[in-house]
Length: 314
Image (cartoon, rainbow, N blue to C red):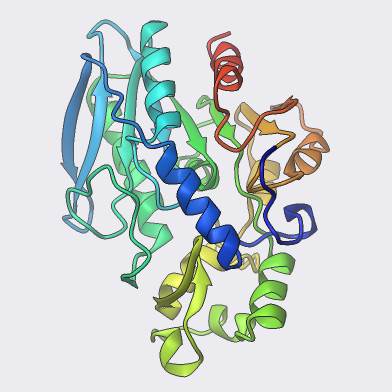
């Protein structure tokens, strides 16, 4: 039996944090699924971001394809996670070129380790999206004329944010258990449960450590951490501020605005997003396909990931 988070279901409006026991379980779960899987075709690649940060990726290429998949990990994750490595190796076995990447979170040459909780969180999700676009342009320069995206969990949101900026209707995106944070749920959590003035923070252009004015907060599955107001805003502003598009819009808004082919995979036993599959199942758009996997969890362990891969390569 999979443990459920002791927190209200995401379908009422989600937020990316959990109480202490859930965070502990989440951490254990993530570290249990880390693997040293690798395959001979993978080549480590390093490029520079616009901010001159060294970005790390792994390119698996047969040197014969003109198409590739770009795979983006989830919250604080990395390209060495089991789900990312399994996707990469299996899709390569099926004849596809693969680029899996590490979002830097502001650290050059970030290794295949989870971003630590006990840092001063000054990273910016906008920069993560820019990094995805930088990798996309890298693949274009490599000669690939068809590049499709795969994003897991928060990586699914980041993929949709990047595609909103790239604006290429030919790109197919595959979203695996994408997060569904909303303004209503995030505001309620921080204001009502943590006593943090959510609206005041996201509507301000000031930059300061929240702990200096309020207290340490739960953030990105970390408990009681130091977070700058700029970082908080970059990840958690869902106010639909059009001047900040696409970064202040949730994933449902981005999907609704998209005209490119989107496939969403959601498991009925997702231990993190709970019954989010119900919300995704209600999407009715001709360019969106929703695949609900009965019994599938957030990381699509075992045969569930094979089902995902079979649909991707159809």
